[in-house]
Length: 83
Image 1 (spheres, rainbow, N blue to C red):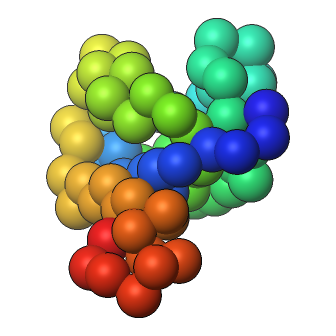
Image 2 (tube, rainbow, N blue to C red):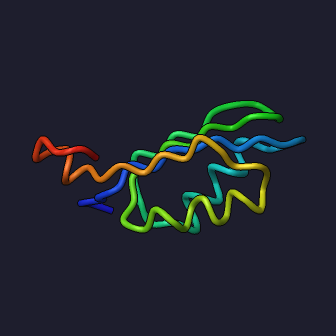
């Protein structure tokens, strides 16, 4: 997807999380780009560009505890404004 506006980042804490399965779900279920999914069975970090930043945290909350959620507007940043 080109022209994604929001840089969305968050952490998911939990047990027995499957990093590869989380990444696969993002690729299949959400429109976006620049996906990075990294971590281990107890902590996963998501970095994602999308136009629908509220969808990812909603799904991630079903996987584990979400925190350190950051959504930045990259259009505003490009104009020199706060994201």
